[in-house]
Amino acid sequence: MPISMQYGASRSVQRPIYSPLWNNADPTAAFASQSVSVDLSGYKYFAVLFRFSTTGNYHLPLAIYTVDETSKVIFLNALGATTVGGRAFSYSIANKAITFQDGNYGNTTNNNYGIPVQIYGVS
Image (cartoon, rainbow, N blue to C red; front, side, top):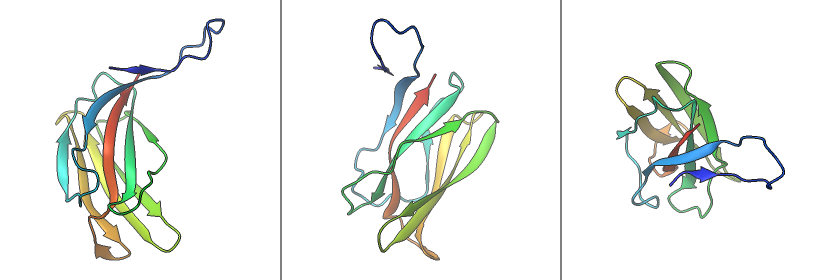
């Protein structure tokens, strides 16, 4: 069910609607390189909620991306107090997919960082 943000009956400002498109079945497990099937063609934006790591008990702020091209590569940089991890990902309108590359820790592949938890279409 889409999430609509309401700010009182007296306001007529339209707020974005977040429609869940995908949920990670186990965000506490390592997330290897893979494609996730999502259809972004009906949305102006999409949002990805990331978990910092498999062992960290917190999420990174919800990141919102513009669906303004047929494809794009994006890099998430996850910074902790003593750790730096990240993950590159790309989307393709034609292939109806978001492809997540392997995660990394420094210069080493480590799929315990930058775990995608949820993907939303935003209109």
